[in-house]
Length: 474
Image 1 (cartoon, rainbow, N blue to C red):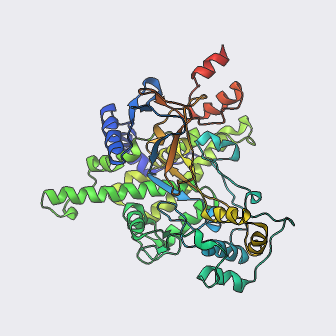
Image 2 (image 1 turned 90 degrees about the vertical axis):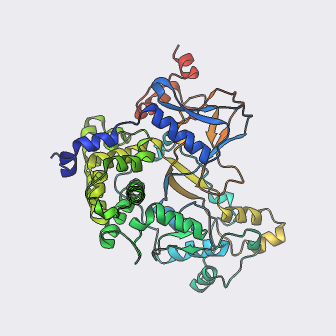
Image 3 (image 1 turned 120 degrees about the horizontal axis):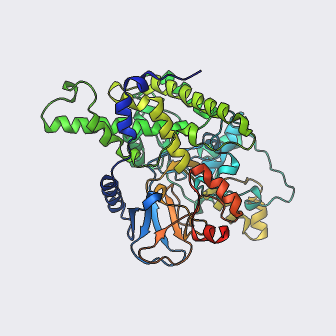
């Protein structure tokens, strides 16, 4: 059965205007301003023929030198990972204390939260992780405190609660201080921050419409909870899409208020949508390369090619269900174009093609490694109450990183250094890079064979013609 979205039918011309790629001069101006604002010295985004945009060096970089750090436009922590790690909902820094991190995780697992597996359609299977520019830094329990018995020591609930409320101090934890926890401005129990500035920035950029607390500005907190539950049970890429839409709605409102202020008229005096203002509010999203999600998502290995059409139709239906829930929660009549299935599908497709699975190094893991390196008597004593711990993982869209083209012999990589403790994307030179040279990364595992690499890159809609591939093809 064909899905029918009334907004798509009624507003096809305006939707086409939103999805039309910005002109090269507009794109150039946007990235020049972004690079200047973020003080990313030594790089420039340029048009690169058939490849679209590309990042180019404007100075020489040495091997292992930092090329740039890119702040995320929107990002979310994976719901399953919230059990393991308490991080700032805006910048992804770990917060609280070593004791709070460990106590919270043990408490949530003790009461049964986080033990059930997620289900539903997943856009990024484990085989796709390298395809999506993922930065991997997973550590197994063997990298944490050693345990000769191979088992963990259970703690009574009283001890767990003492860890959470700060009554119980772990040995040497004072060597790993963390920022204090700041609550959400809306009063929800889902978002926490490392500072008041992060809490305010998140609230103003998107959260005020997506908060489930008492001060939420959503149309319906009940509908919002249903949307979030659906995303958690199916695919958290919907949470990213919701942030992008909320971000655009709030930008539109600010632009309209500013526009009316200049004309000395109240914003409420202008009825209907100002398409030019909506296009301006949409600009940060418009820059990203897009395709419909159900068209560009990779076919899972367990789906036969003969069932591809059915699979893609099911993905479209999943997106439509998510959109209806989101529309009920935060719909804005003046921004109704953002709630069309065509727009929603392209936003999700943009994340599918450009997202970076970010890793923030865990200070708790550093704590365990410190314990592991202690002299034997102190180490044995400390290990009586320490537990292995994992890194924090989230998914985010980075404007500059999304412009980087692929090469099977890249000259740069996304890599977290010891000092990189927040959610920014960090791009490091793999070899010396000359002024004027394009900076490239690999979207996939470059150690695969030529045929395997080309098959994976086909999901991105291109055939690689890098020097290595041309040489191997010959």
